Image 1 (cartoon, rainbow, N blue to C red):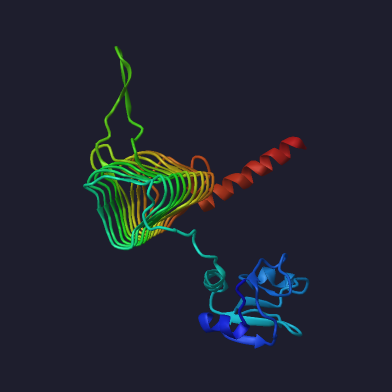
Image 2 (cartoon, helix red, strand yellow):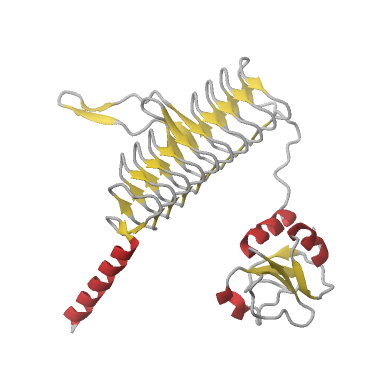
Length: 332
C-alpha cells in the first residue's frame, strides 16, 4: 500500500502547509467518508462546514479558506484545490493492468500492419491490413482495429473498442471500453419502390491529440469526408456524435448527449448531459448547452442556452418563473 507524508505530497503540489500532523496518508477520500489517515479536499467555501465532522487528518484547500485545520490536522493551501486533487489521485493511482508479454500469442496481426516500438497488444485483438500503430500504443484484450487505420503515439485503447477502417487516432488519446470509432453514419432516404435506401458512408473519423472517448460512445464516420474531433476534446460515456460533425479544440460532451449529423462546435464548447443538438447546427466557441436541452438553431459564441427548445439561459429562467407562477395561480 502506498503511503506519503504531508511533506512528500506537498513536494508535488508546491502549496503552503498550515498546521501539523505526523500521520502518514494512506489514500484520498471525500470529506464525509475519509478516515483519519486519509486526505480530502475542499474546493468550495460551501463545504468548509463539513470539515469539523470529517475524520480526515489533512485536506487540500483553496487559498481563500476561512477556517483553521485544528489539532493534529493539516491544510495544504493551493490556488485550485480541484486541480491539485487530481495530482494527488495520480500519486495514489494503482498500476495499469499488466502485460506478461508485449504482444499476446492470440492476437491476430495482418502481415502488412506496421507496429511501432514498445507497443502492447492484448489477447484476442485484431489488427487489420495496412494498420499503423505508432510507438507506445497499448491495446487491451479484444480490441479491433480495421484496415488502414492509424493510431498515434502513447494512445491507449481499452477492451472491446472497435476502430473501423481508415480512421485516424491522434497521439496520447484514450478510448474506453466498447467505444466505436467510425461506424456508419445514420443515412437513409425514402424510395417509393425500395422503402428506406441506405446512403453509403465513405468517409472516416479523425481524432486529434489528447482526445478521450468514453465507454460505449459512438463517433460515426463521415458520409463524404471526415468526422473530426479537435485536440483535447473529452467525450463522456454513452455519447453519440453523428456523421460529418466537426468539433473544435477542448470541447466537452457529458453522458447521454448527442450531435446529429453535420453539427459544428467551436473551441471549448460544453454540452451538458442528455442534451440533443439538431443536424447542421453551429455552436460557437465557449458556448454552453445546459443538461437536457434541445438545440434546434445556431448558438452564438460564449452564450449559455437552456431548455427544450433551447433559448438563452436568462430567457429560459424567466419562462420557467412565469410558468411556475401560472401553475401556482391556477391552483388557487
